[in-house]
Image 1 (cartoon, rainbow, N blue to C red):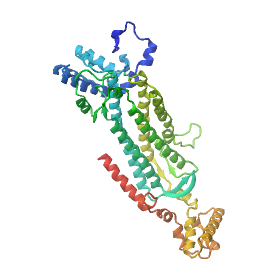
Image 2: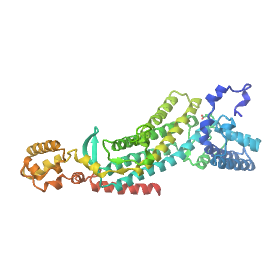
Image 3: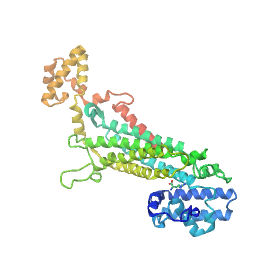
Image 4: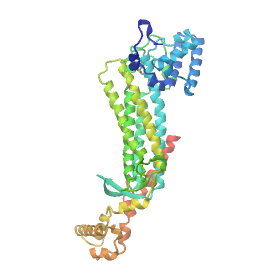
Length: 461
Ligand code: ARG
């Protein structure tokens, strides 16, 4: 049943139905549409359009329909309806007759769809917040369990300075915390209700828009009807939130793919999140991580796609805007999937502490410590710097770390060196010297773990 049949003598072509119908995807907003209709029926009742008995009839039927939707009992596609709005109205009409035909008084699908989609986004902000907090929690657990593990930190993918593995994990905690607050910011900005804006100019019925907004869980009503039915900023912002967070997870995935490589072997991934090769029996591929990286493409594309769709659209509603949904629904789904599988990957991950430390040592990051040690023994810094450089060259020829050189070997470099050099050359000594807020020393990293735990408890509480 088309909602607009009266003016038309002929039916739609099949091809038109294919290009126009949105029930295939906007069915995800079924419960939001029904909830919006309940609140609209109350508004109509209060405005004197529906009697209390009629409103109760509608509300009761819509509650039954919500329950059916939640149980997956509704056959959207089989209904032949154009979109979720016509579906709900057609079902109500089949059941209640003329009362249902009063429901759309003063409402347009333009303010209806804007409201439904905002409600859908609001619901998914709640879901994604939970996902992000779980991901953060898993990172913090990983940081805490492995707080003693030191690995190379990289710039240009060259070993630069040793860092705690926990410091690496906590870097992503910071990024994901920002992803979380970005969602909160989006929620605050979009928390206004379009319903009551009509097709574009506002409704003629004296409904209480504040009450409508409040009953639907919005902070307030949208204040301009043209803007209310035309705005899709909230979808764009959601897609930006998704894109940025996916980018963060992609970098995390890339780091872990490298740490898991045969060359690094810092970590092992669990069987549950890896796959084998159909040809090479020895392979164990980091597929989950590669997909966390790979799915960025479609999420970023959804953001670009909608920006291009919206650009140049005249006010107010245009059917182009129906294209706001598929990309956003997919982006939210992929983001949710990636956050969820990310938690499993992190939970399955085992660190090889010895390999991490061996690699960290081979970076000769403690050469500066050796120079400082020589300075403390009275050698001028410039000379000490040269001597330390010679020690590195010698150690490389021996394929050893500086602290693996014997005292006899070190004394060949300078006879002021004695046994007290070894503690200074230890990796942990070097790392723990970065005992400053934001640094990788044990003290600031432990403090960061504790702070992250407080943050998680606040989010959950
Ligand atoms: N399916 C449409 C959408 O998602 C609903 C709004 C239709 N409005 C209209 N004026 N044809 O955008």
